[in-house]
Image (tube, rainbow, N blue to C red; front, side, top):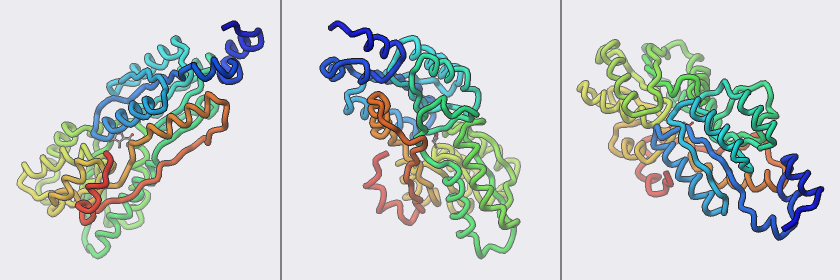
Length: 322
Ligand code: AHR
C-alpha cells in the first residue's frame, strides 16, 4: 500500500492512525499498547495484571507487558523501550508518585499518548498524560476511618491504632493515610501509636506486625489499619503467633477486598475490607481505542467501590471476581 504525502506527514507527526491511514489499512492495523506494571506484590496486583492481559486479548489489542518488580527505574526503562518501539499508547501504574516528568516529556515529544492506571503521578504538567483511571485512595482511607469511628463510638478510653502503610511514596500509601487521619482526628481518643511500611506484601506485613506487638505489648494495640489485605493477612499470622485473637483482641481493617480477605473474614479473623477494584482492563482498552481514534477521553475516571464488613462476607464471597 502506498501512503500519500499527507498521510506520511500525519504519521510522522504522531497523529492518530485513523487520520493517517485509509479505511482498509486502518482496519487491519492492530493497536499496540505498552504496559508497565508495578510488580506482583499482592493478590490485588495479580488480579489487575490478569484483567489487563485478558481485556487486551478480548479487544484485539497487542499488549507489550513489562513487570517492574516494584522498582521505578525498571518502569522508566520499560517506558523508554516502548517509546523506542513506537507503540501506539503507553499505559502504566506508577510505583511511586514523583519523578516521572522527564520520561513523560520524552513520550510526549515522541507523540505517544500516556494513560495512568490505578496510581497517579505528582506532576505540575497534566498535559503529560491523557487520563488517569482508578480508585479514589483518599476516599478509601476515609471509609476505613468512618467504619472505625462508628464501631468504636461507645468506647470510652483511648483507642490505640497501629498502621501498616503501603509502599513508601506510592499514591495509595500517601492517600489512604491521609483519608484515614482526616476522619479519626475529629476524636482525640483515636491515636496512631505506630505506623510503618509493610510494602504491600504479606511477608513484610507479618514482620512489621511482630515488631509492633513486641514494642507495644499484648494489650497495647486495639486496632490494626492495614493499607491492603495482603499486609493484614500477614499481620493476622503474627497476631495469632503472639497468642491473640485477630478481629477480637485487635480490630482489623484493611483495603482491597480480595478473595483472601473474604476467607479471613469468613474465618472470623478480619473485621472489614474496603473495596479497591483491580478490574481495570476493560476500561483501559476502551480508552486506548478512543485515544487512537482521536475521540475525547475524560481526564479522570474513578472506580466505584463498596465496603465489606465481616458479617456480609459469606453472602458476598460467591459473587467476588478477584
Ligand atoms: O495501587 C493499588 C494497591 O497496590 C493495592 O491496594 C495493593 O494491594 C497493591 O499492591
